[in-house]
Image (cartoon, rainbow, N blue to C red):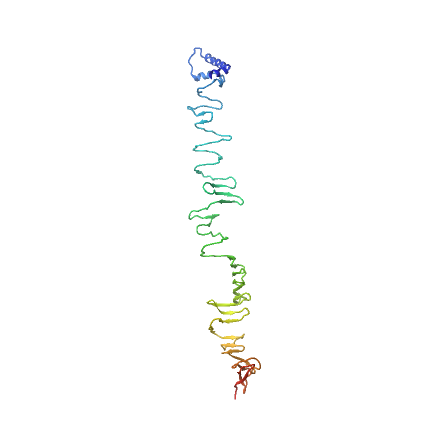
Length: 375
């Protein structure tokens, strides 16, 4: 191979040897021994072509772009790879592919990588910045992908998993506690709660609707059970009947029905007082044994201004022990009467009678005077 190399470059080789001979004999006629470095200085610049060097080491090599100061091999070039013991560069331009890098420190303005494997620590006082929306932290592996990312439309952080705070910690807005392990913050004033556990205390400002059955109207200050439009301070509506409890004309209280419905007062699930829709009142229940009614006071019937001197004031006829008692200027001349019925004389006079008594039932029956007045 050497012969071939020399043959191909014979002209260049002749020129190099001639220049070398001139350099050796020009300055040293006594053929004194010179050092390799001195010998190299006597060779004119560019007098040897790189084509004349084959094999061996070039010591102290340098050029305009390369300076070799190594004392041992640092670069090995083969057909498939360039091996460098240590590499220090100021700038790498263009697309570069790295494989199996083992580095203690990497300093860079931007690192773009498809995957980073290993434990990452941020030891300086810097922030982790994500450029643009819809980015964040993603965990892959077994099961579904776990996410904590920032999304837009609307702006929000999205977490695919449960956020579990340490005991004693809380969620805050503008430095104010809004939710902790035991309570909502005092600034939380609106909610759409659908289900709660046991309440120890509850203060509500405004209208209320519970299960579309219990209603409180804050405008009218009325409470309705089964109706959202109560006609009294408190109304209970069932089977289209509304029972009211409230006031009327700001001077009296009322208990009763709103529409034309009867009203019953019951005990033991039995009606004791019945009031019909037209106002008739019944004390007791005809389907039960007679009840006892006690009046501790004065009683009047059909009297607008009862006489305070009497305990019973009746404006009209009465029946006492099944016998009629009424007042008239004479005995009846028409109508059906029973034996023992009495008509009291409304115009009593001396030598007249106190009244008349029916001695035979009929229409009007037979009446006899009784109780002559005076002589």
